[in-house]
Length: 259
Image 1 (cartoon, helix red, strand yellow):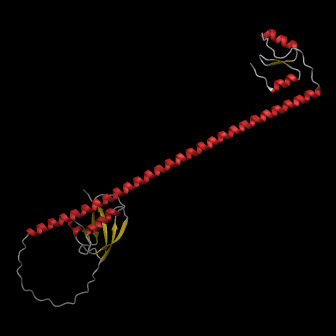
Image 2 (image 1 turned 90 degrees about the horizontal axis):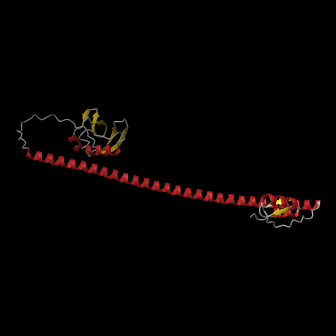
Image 3 (image 1 turned 30 degrees about the vertical axis):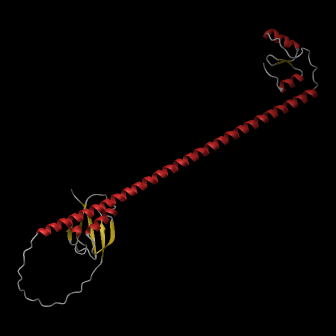
């Protein structure tokens, strides 16, 4: 059953009859009877008595009231739509903030994982370098022990002294005692490392410095000098730099070792 509305009531006041079963409006009782005969409706809430027609002024007033109600309804609908739009915008903003916070937390978590990974890699690199140092020291100790054992088994012949003419005394040239040497190290990729070492440091210290600071591709290598031309052997790594002629300065070349 269709409910009454203010608009229907106002139209009824303006001279229209209303059939309650279907909500239709009729101008006269003849139209009501025709509708009842055609549709079978017989429940009418209004009397079939025709209402007194309104004057023009009354009709204008009723129409004005109707238009005002329509405007009021439209305003209420617009306010409702505006409120719904605001609520939707609030929900959208809230959802956006939640997504931004979730994204920020995810980025912070990823950054934390990255920092932890870099920390692990740095620690692993430190351990690897320490292992290299220990291996070099162990090799040096093994070579020293081997050399000592071989030296102990050798019986050097007793030299027979022979008289030699006494040389004429010559003034000795003053010899400067260097305590440091400055080495320029040329890598396989053309880069250059420059470092100061103690004159009594062994060549193995230079090799370790190269392994820890090189910028060329990793791999086994030999050390050599061009002037004079000399490729350092495995035994040379235990010799001091001044004994090898690398004091007070020298250019050392890194050459890729061919297996």
